[in-house]
Amino acid sequence: MLLDVEEIKEYLPQRYPFLLVDRIVEMDLGKSIVGYKNVTINEPFFVGHFPGQPIMPGVLIIEALAQVAGVLGFKSQEKKTKRRLSLLLCRCG
Image 1 (tube, helix red, strand yellow):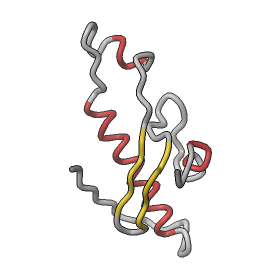
Image 2 (cartoon, one colour):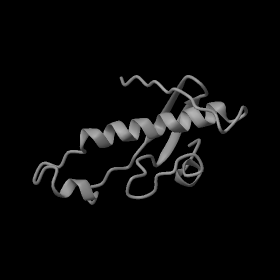
Image 3 (cartoon, rainbow, N blue to C red):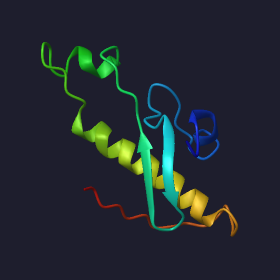
Image 4 (cartoon, rainbow, N blue to C red):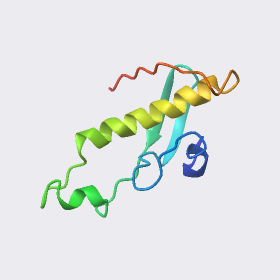
């Protein structure tokens, strides 16, 4: 594991229940990143989405992708300035 949740929180403003990254396991600065979110049946969004067939809402999946991409962006720019606006593009799959 490269980054645990405590280290991730140094780069992202989101906190529980909206922090959707638990760990970063691979990272090639400026190029790619692999992160995980441990999803359990106890997640608040599963109560109504959908009863009997819980599915993580797509918008939360996209938010998780954006958070992982944010970590990559901040880590890639770390040696430069922390106050720089960066454009992040991600590809799934």
